Amino acid sequence: MTAHATPHPAGHTASAAAGRPLMTASGVEKSYRRGIWPARHAQAVLKGANLELLPGEVVGLVGENGSGKSTLMKVLFGELAPDAGTVEHVGRLGYCPQEPVVYERLTCDEHFELFGHAYRMNPADEHTSRRRLYETLGFTRYAGTRADQLSGGTLSKLNLGLALLADPEVLLLDEPYAGFDFDTYLRFWDLVAERRAAGRSVLIISHFVVDEHRFDRIVQLHDGTTHDRPPHDRPSE
Ligand SMILES: Nc1ncnc2c1ncn2[C@@H]1O[C@H](COP(=O)(O)OP(=O)(O)OP(=O)(O)O)[C@@H](O)[C@H]1O
Ligand SMILES: [Mg+2]
Image 1 (spheres, rainbow, N blue to C red):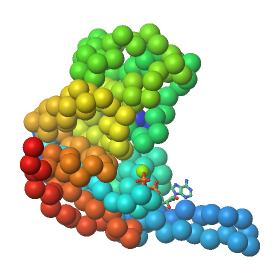
Image 2 (image 1 turned 180 degrees about the vertical axis):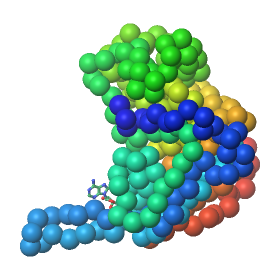
Image 3 (image 1 turned 90 degrees about the vertical axis):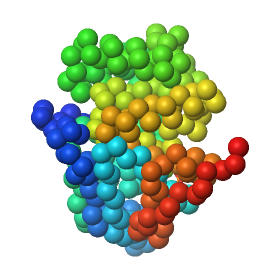
Image 4 (image 1 turned 60 degrees about the vertical axis):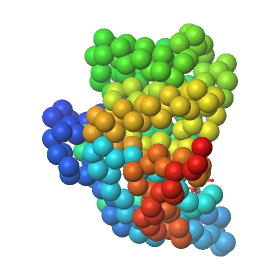
């Protein structure tokens, strides 16, 4: 369950940060070791990646397949330890992994309950947040359905809902909307806009050039390092 969030000490809020970054990563390096001796070798994926997320910022993380976007996000969340560099954040983290991490035999309701406990939410707040997420993402009718019986798109909604449940200061989303129908996709961007307005930070890994105008800033990962890139102009509609 820690794949989706970490609890945090009380008292750290976005407003307390007052314009200071909610997340800062500096000089992140990460290699994967492959093969078995004597053919064992290390593949350097991140070679000094830097990233800063300010309150109210929606940042896109782009790069070609295999460039290390998911690896960087796992390091930011704390699922992977970097070989070098530092990651600091203020407040709570929500993480929506590229491959949903769910318990096959639990229903959507049971997932929310479990994650609510992990976040140390009080049950009334958890219920309110859960109901709102069901409604916004449009999967109320699957509340009692087991995860192994959900469609791919609904599983993605659950994955995203669990990351959002505790209203985290920093939300890390790894290709969150690939399986969404068009209405859900639009509602997803409404949710993101709400977080921006509330002074939260959102980092989204995306491959869709058509979405680039929705980001405040775009960071490109190339050859293991991060580069700032201005969003493309809004496409003509
Ligand atoms: N657990 C692992 N063990 C070994 N190598 C890995 C592991 N995870 C990722 N890699 C390798 O690290 C590189 C970066 O992978 P990563 O998943 O971070 O890329 P990505 O940018 O998210 O790609 P995509 O756009 O396809 O999701 C790839 O070459 C991949 O094969
Ligand atoms: Mg990836």
